[in-house]
Image 1 (cartoon, rainbow, N blue to C red):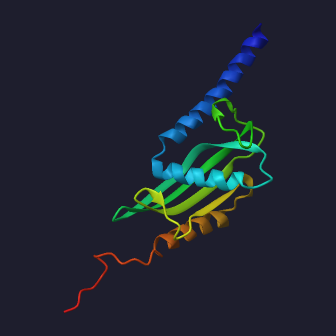
Image 2: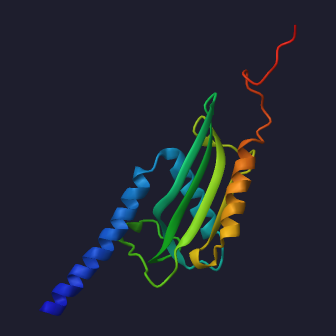
Image 3: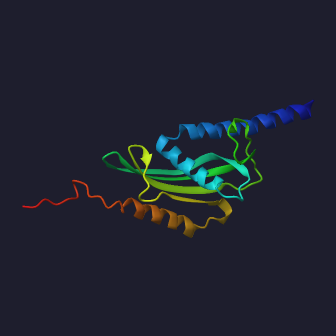
Length: 163
């Protein structure tokens, strides 16, 4: 009886952590959820990926809003494998696997009127956490920082008037 109770508590705890992760995803602002979806889409396109992944938690969120309904988004977050197969539609019953490393993702992109723009091309970099080096982290941030200044569009405040 005690073993059954223990099994029930452990199962409830695993399911609860999956539900908490889904709540964490749903609490993300829409602009950040779009980036998580972009990373999941890229991850699922790899033939070697066999499991369903879910958003686990944010590490760093940043956005720059220069105006005119434009935003530059940077989001660093973890994805975690579940026991469900890749392609699972209803992930509410998917329990996290604790035998797989987290996937550390960084995404940056430009949005206009709430939609991800094709230019500059969105940047998605996901890697198993143990393989991620400090140099890679620095290169991610550097890439995203230069991307936000490459828009090429002048704003009214940056333009010089003629006399």
